[in-house]
Image (cartoon, rainbow, N blue to C red; front, side, top):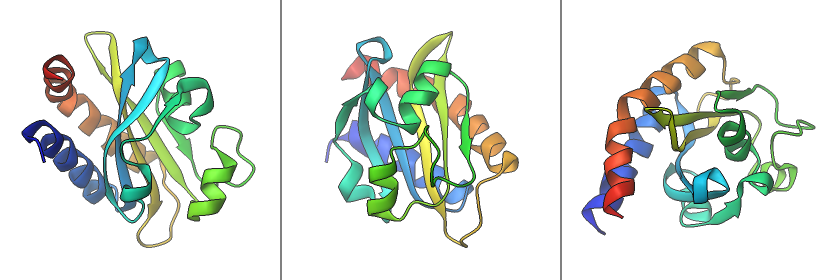
Length: 148
């Protein structure tokens, strides 16, 4: 594993820990935010998610966070149009959260959390914690984006 990949994996792992998520993902914005690249993940569904790409318009939660450049909190995924219902159903995702990673007004990506380990829904406090962490790691992700 490259050092750069390890950095992103560590960011995903810490994001998972701070919001008590089953799965956490570091998604990078490619092509000016038109493409979502799931660069790293930690937890239950990491293997199924990591290294996948999708257009922002078809990616669900991260795409919504990219387009709006604001956190997206989904307390109940079922029937919520901001979430890919096919993926939510296949992975048993009941609650989700995505926050954009922005540095000096440049969209770098998003941090996404899926399901809480205790079965509760994500809430505004979790959103605040993850958004704060996204701001903190933005310079690190920026460096990664430049290096890669």
